[in-house]
Amino acid sequence: MSGLFVSFEGIDGSGKSTQARLLRDALAAQGRDVVLTREPGGSPGAEEIRRLVLEGDPDRWSAETECLLFTAARRDHLERTILPALTAGKVVICDRFADSTRVYQGVSRGDLRDAVDRLHALMIGREPDLTVLIDMDPATGLSRALGRQGTEERFESFGAGLQERMRAAFLGLADEFPARFRVIDGARDVEVVAADVLETVTAALAAPPGALPPDPRSI
Ligand code: ADP
Ligand code: TYD
Image (cartoon, rainbow, N blue to C red; front, side):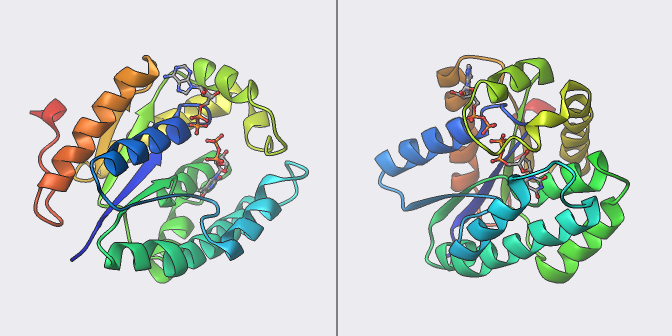
């Protein structure tokens, strides 16, 4: 038995965490075994790395060093949390995964996509079965993200221009990997987005392993 690995991606404040939680609740209510996790983090060691990368001066790390730190955190998360849960047949819902590194370190902070991909192939070698991209206008995302309290403001302080480039980069990945990406409009009421997400994930759960149904939007 093998579970389903679902990642949520999108710019800061697009509603990923909210939607990941709602999806977990909806699937759990159906009696499914679900693990909700996040990156960077999701295992004790990776949560320690999260603090290193997300707190402190925005210039603390170069894009290259960041790429190594995020990949180290991901390797630990994969070994200790994600793969054991999938092997046990659970649904793993992950708030961000490798596509975030492709966008944030690979595109937005320098032209490192090739290095990101090579490191991924060497150390991670696994993609989600389904990636839900919560797409929305960056101005709305930024105002939502800045409205939150907390110390993890390093990335959010980068501003609207960068968020616009990241949105475009996420949409570019959806074009590059159409088999696993599904793009969902996040600029709607929480419940409307959640219904769309649940429909998408339910279709993936009903499909044979490794064979997601075609994206209804592309037919
Ligand atoms: P992300 O994880 O993508 O950064 P969050 O889920 O933390 O986004 O949402 C950012 C903020 O926006 C939170 O305060 C959340 O309550 C709010 N929010 C999330 N989804 C919506 C929505 N569809 N409409 C309005 N506000 C939302
Ligand atoms: P997250 O807590 O998901 O932020 P938000 O809820 O605001 O979307 O992620 C923290 C930040 O880490 C976010 O700005 C994106 C960044 N990040 C990377 O730069 N590279 C990565 O590989 C990951 C997973 C996240």
